[in-house]
Image (cartoon, rainbow, N blue to C red; front, side):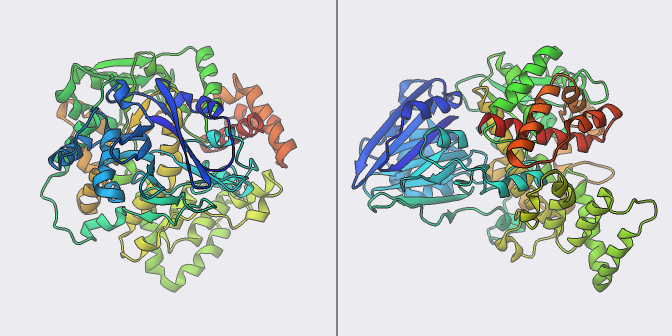
Length: 623
């Protein structure tokens, strides 16, 4: 895992400042490479977190001495050993044991088609010395971030983080108010937008070129090389694989265990991480470290059950106990570490920082399983509403007046507005999912932010025209919507900044490319959660001795937001709200929020206050 930055153009910038901004992503080594091509300069900067081949042979920028091609790469190629053998069979010789060299020399043989062979998480820039162009590519699901911007002087800059592009001094710094509006809807920024108007996210599962021979550097139209929807029940027409789900998951796990540094696992009391632990235990019992967090809250704490799982599997388990003082400090540190504001991610930051104290550089997570296997309750509720809409047909129009007159609801209540918004989208599972995930309603936004009406119709698009043509079933549409929306824009982005801030690499086995394809090929009748069994494909992997993981209600690792916002982070909340009011036209009342926290506001509403605190903290810090 590393930090990358590339620039093509004619401007000057301080590379030391950019490397400093990316140092947390790669503390082990940093270097730069540059060349003049025609009227343009090309600069490639890299900071390295050494995971594979810790020697100087794995340093970047890496040069192919035969072709002059150069690469900077962030991520891991899990199937690099398989690709290495293919290349060796074609006479390619290697000088390192790194996956970076496999990627670089693979391009020599396969060109841009190499991206279609990769199973991993990655973002890379590869300078083709012969074609005089830069290949830009990002992994299949967006685990690794990649941002780009047109600079003030007509160049192009690309980087692993928004802050690195801003630090270069080449990019306009204007805030994107429409993107901030979308943040209020979803609690995160929706790709391709970012919090800065000039900066966009490069799309996952795509590659593009920048031609250095032209006077004005521009990125070509990105080309899509992978589409998960086409693997649903073999939409692509390939022969059905006879390899079982268990075999694919185990193979994926073994590939993601490859590292020359200690490997750990974030272990909760739930199904997803318990499956990973139970499958990993026989493979690396003496070398796998598991970690969980003691929330000091008996109603939500999972540490005892997680410890029981580790004990039964004979794994080396650690429970992180933090004092309130330490935890308060770390919470503020997590706000500081964010590359963009987020309503989430702090929990990952805390457990990552705790595990780092035990020397763990690589950690595995159960992230992504719920999106693939229908683990969220709204998979059921949205499917039922969609079927209700189909049954009602033209009579659906009668629902909205009925909602507005439900007895017991106050006129214009938020609950009424939320249900109204949901039923307006009853014909679209993807749109109902957006409403289910919504943080603030349009009415709430218009009350807390006076400029919000300008963006009333701003709703991110989690649909895909290609998917819509495939006639997919409702649960698959919900799954794809979760993957393109909440997973990509919240969970994966947060997982990246939260672990990279602690100089740690997070791997997510459930999002391995071949594993995702396998799960999508399996009909929902075999993987749907029922009253008798949750996520059956995964539950079947759990041995009888660990049945406690199957019976526990889904909670996740969550914080006592009320306690911290009304206690140690009270000043932080007030400062954030004051800045939002004075600098951005919000109408927030911190004293009223403090009162609501004391009388016991709903958990969801408290999370909204947290999201606003995160936003205000970030805008103030980076203004």
